[in-house]
Length: 284
Image (tube, rainbow, N blue to C red):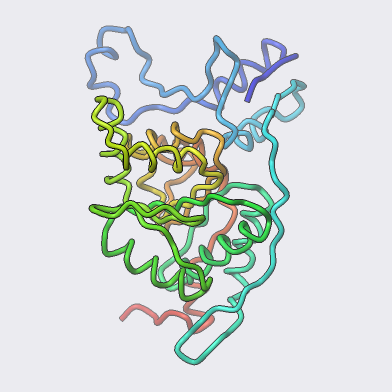
C-alpha cells in the first residue's frame, strides 16, 4: 500500500509502528559495527509503501493523524453460504465458530484463523473453498508442508465439499479448480524454472499456478519460510487465508511477518471454549 499526503509526523509514526527488534541482533557483526540498528523494517521509507496485511497495525498507531493510503486491489465480492458437513452419522451443520471464521475471511478477502485442535479446521477450509467457488473464484491453491497432512486434508475436503481436488506432490502434477500442493514440491519446481531446467510438464504446471486467485495455507505459522515466499511472489495478487494453532503475537517479529502475508487474525477458537462445548476433553 502506498502512503501519500502524509506529514512528517505521520510518516514517523507509520515507520515506528512497522519496525520491530530482531531477536539476537546485538550479536551480529552489522549491529556491533554500527551499520544496523537491529530492527526489521516493514515500511519502505523510500517508496512510502507497506504490505496491505499490516494496515490495521498502522491504523492503531496513527490515531488522529491524516494521510492517504492507495489500495489498488480489485477485490471480488465473496458471499458466505453455510454448507452441510459430512460425518459418520450423516450431514450436519457446521459449528457456529466454523461459520463465523469463514464469514470473516470472506468479508476481508484474507485473514488468519487461530484455531485450537478439534476446532474443525478442515471443515472450515472446505466451507471457504465452496463459498469462493460459488462466488466466482476459479483457481484455489491449498498449501501443505507434510505428505500425511496433505492426504488427510484432501480426503476431508473432498468429503465435505463433494469436489475432486488436484494434487501437486512428488510424482503427481494434476491441476484442478482446487488444487492441494506440497510446498516442497512447488519449491523444487520453482528452482528448476530458475535454473532453466523446466520440462514441458513443469511449464504447464507453472502456467496453471500463475492463474491462482486464492491461496489457503494450512499450518500457516510456517509461511514465513523462504519456500513459501517464492510461491506468494509467483501469484502476488492472490487472496491469502491462513489456518494455524500457533500464531505468534502481533508484537513479535514472526507475528508481524505472518500478518504481513495474511492480514489480521479474524477468528480465534481456544481450547477452553472447545472443552466448555464438549468438543475437547480436559487435560488429564
